[in-house]
Amino acid sequence: MIAVLLWSGGCQTGDDRSNAVAALEVPDLRGGLVPIFEPEDRLYRFEGPELGDFSGLPLNEAGFAKAREYTPDTQYLPENQCKPHSPPYIMRSALRWEILQEPEVVTLKMESFEQVRTIYLDGREHPPPDARRTFMGHSVGHWEGQTLVVDTTHFEEGYIRRNGAPHSDRAHLVERFTRDGDFLLIMITLADPVYLTQPFTRVIAHRYVPDLEIRPYPCEVRPPI
Image 1 (tube, one colour):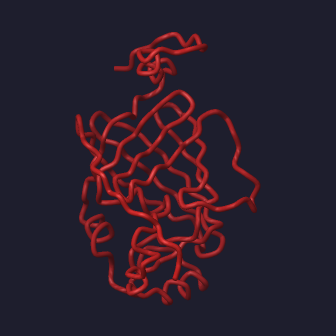
Image 2 (cartoon, rainbow, N blue to C red; image 1 turned 180 degrees about the horizontal axis):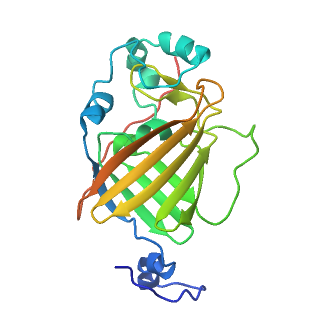
């Protein structure tokens, strides 16, 4: 059940802010979450598939070539020890996370490396195509009924899977967040003109846990030596 309040704008008290989500007549996504591990997720969220196993991924020739360059040893370089994961990868993290929600912004606080994703709901557009890339990229969202649709661009090159399957910095991510009681389903569609022949879609599930604590995970990104 969703409480409905009238949105009057202007200055807000603490109580006003806490009830701001209800004012929009949209689902309340707030809360702490833990991943639900299906058999496939256990493989891809922990040790990862075998090197060279890219089954189910629509990699093109450039994507296969890039993936075969990967070696796990690079992950032990100092500059990679705390390197944040990209949006297509971080949502499949094995660690807990939290959603904070306000009328014009939704914030995803990840326990992994204390990463934060900001999703703007104020109608803004993405930066120009050649604007600077960042670890988390630029995310905008809107509501379609009971589903929050998030569109993310401008994130740095990274991995789709832990065995080196890549995405480029030209990739385009669309996520659909739908809450069903104590569960959150996220449908992820990744398009990449550089490394994929067609968009790649998957669905991941998370479970809400009351009063879940997001534990500290201090880690500082180091510049390459």
